[in-house]
Amino acid sequence: MLHRSRAFAAEGGAPVEILTFDNFRDYPDIRKTLAGQGKLTDGVTLRNIWEDLTHLAGDAPVLPAEDLAGFRPLGEAGTPVTTVEGGPSGRTQRFAADGTTLLQTDYLRADGTLFLSDCNDVDTPGQHGGRSLTLCNAQGLPVEQWRSSWEMYRSWLDHLTDGIDSFFIVDNKHAATFMKTYRRPSATVFLMVHDSHLATAVNGPASPLSGSGEVVVPRFDNFDGVAILTRMQAEDIRARVGDIGNIHVIPNSRAVPVQPVEGDRNPTAGVLLAQLRPLKQIDHAIRAITDVNHRLQTPATLGVYGEGDEGPKLESLIQRLGVSSLVQLKGHTHSPAKVFGESSFSLLTSSSESFGLVILESMSAGCVPIAYDIHYGPSSIITHGVNGYIVDYGNEEALADCVAAFLALPAEQKAQMREAAISRAGDFSDAPVVSMWSDALAAAAAMKAIPAPELSVAVTDTAWGIWSDGALDLRVTARLTAESDSLDASTPRFLCRLRIRGTESFFRASGELTGQTAGGVFSSVFRFAPDVMRALGESVVDATLETHLLGRRVASRLPFRAPVPPPVDVYGTVHGNLSLRPLKPAASTSTANAV
Image (cartoon, one colour):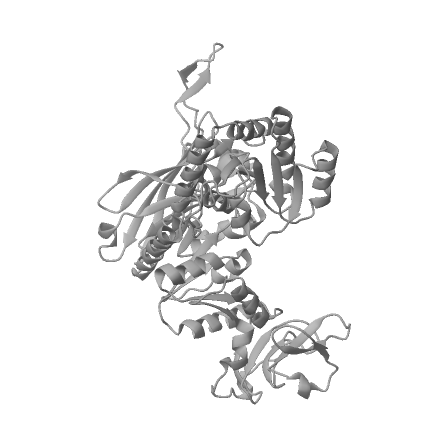
């Protein structure tokens, strides 16, 4: 996020503000640290709502008492209060009679004056329930009041943008739950997906969602754009939730320095940069390097850079394998480019990634990457045998094979691979990636600017069928009525959603248009793949037709139409062949039964 912000400012000439909402950090110190590390540069500023609130009131008019709810500054309440140290401002707090239930927090300026009172017992004083956040001027008098923190956040964003066309990129899954509610004509809001949305990929695109995936995937439609790091992940997302036209593939970028192909590089040194946790499977790399050293006369080494809870377990493995002189845990590094520049090859043995930025950093330094073929990232960057190696996931022997094969290459071939790696990293340099962002943001803003037409949808017929492989087909016919010439100007997009009842989780398929009449009647078929049907398991799901036209979306529950009994019986013969036989019409005993 910091790198992208710097790239926007440097390559695009656009000022970037990084917005934060927490109220417990020392932001002056954070700015100083980031600036000292070169991560906060000209054109990039860091703003926090709690710092801004101290002077946001300005000279706004004071609110009359009858317009306020629950505004009782602690200095005037005559009740016991607690002083809280730390954070960007001083705070005092009031608790309920139980001594643990927080009922009020007052935030103070440096001079001790009240700038925000957050009261949580508006409904009944002394009992938690009902909230008000009251902003005060320099004299501690109320000038604005909100009934939730999200209302306050939206007011701050409105203050920052002041109606000017603005672009927001949301990098945090928790912020996404709020930012999906920030809908303004002048605000184009993008969600950046940094991680794999799947916990595992054992069931293809229909595999269980990861923790962050459960938060963001059901909310994709609420954003003007969603940025996905790789084409493979974007395809899996579209296969799961369809495509309403807001998904864009935009990789991470890096400033790619001109690296010497050899220089001071250790020709047999490997490196692995990752957090020391189970997801990264660093034990695979340790065992693979041990295997390599059983095959080669010249010892190969591996430096593992990172921190995490798996450290003691990995150190124990190194000792047990007797490779402490060859494999070392080196802790965190602030200079990954230097580490890669001194190493011959890098390893990535994770079970899941969304992009594998570490691969790009390795390649840009001429360090040849050797990576498991995982969802997502490595195969989108590496061309096997040209600028790195792709290894079947989890195959430690194949991992060792690739390391040994690379180390055995003549020096000239190694140099060619390093040059190819640096060249490939150039495809992800700042300039082309910033250009991708520019195109995506402009397209989303243009789509947002199109007035959404009035649209009504009437589903007139539904049918379904189950294929022998377990796939489900839903066939839907609907009559559309739209204002003016909207249907002539654009073809509607149809999707069918199967939502698991009682949850936000759903699967959605794009429709294949099978018929259209001049009267606005459209027929579509939606196919849900076998892996989707398996993933639904025993869940009860509700089917909904979604019709999208020029920014307007209409959701229509699919009515149940009982199928007409077939005139024939379809059956399988003893040899497994398909046969049919006519059915005798059932005798009807009354008109009601016949109907």
